[in-house]
Image 1 (cartoon, rainbow, N blue to C red):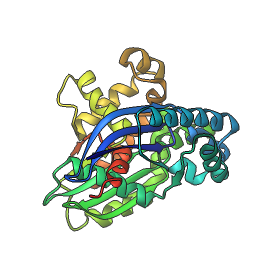
Image 2 (spheres, rainbow, N blue to C red):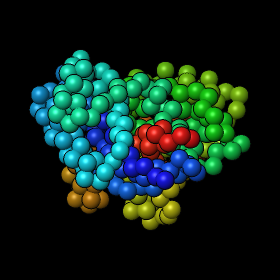
Image 3 (cartoon, rainbow, N blue to C red):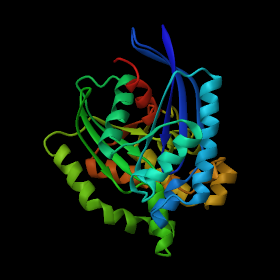
Length: 305
């Protein structure tokens, strides 16, 4: 017997929902549909410290739609989690209360460790990690989670406040532009370097694994810009070339020539450079892109596995 469930990920750049049928026997999940609403909560929180009334209304409309969809598709259980932007919003309780009042959907605000655990759960269900030491990089709008695992066991995870939307807001606040990204990256390297060194010092990672919409986009850009397949992994050399090509295009050109969504076109270079920085620091030359993420981990968390 299968049950129909939905998982909602309230990130800093978008609110995403996934509906799937889960079977507890095997256990297995079967994707029914994915949704994405471009609600950039991070813009508010990283500049003003709160979720503004305007964004609150857009989020409420999104949740109203998701709630209706759950009813129409006969979803029996829904788990919604909020990450970096909500964690830091001074009015996060008001946000959680208003969404519940208007949609009946209860939101859990989770910390970076739980976020890392759920993403790791999704990845180990998708990839064979036996006898491998891996580094998971999840690039979000507000934070970056870097998780190390040995086989399918998570051994260390840490969340860094260096997500793509936050980096953009940081540039804008200081009247800098994309060409100054290295300055912003440099400011985060101390903490990040320590985490990487501690976990790579005695044993190198076999490969990295990248999750999040930006990584999936970079996989597709490999095909588009480099004319290389498959889109399910990138080498560091390929990533370097993609960054070079993207940096030569203005945001408007990325939208027009590469058909990127506006809310992807402005964050894709910071995302790519974050991945590049982490891979270089960890001295790993290959990143797999399994096209799963937090939502998939949430769905798996609702099975008995």
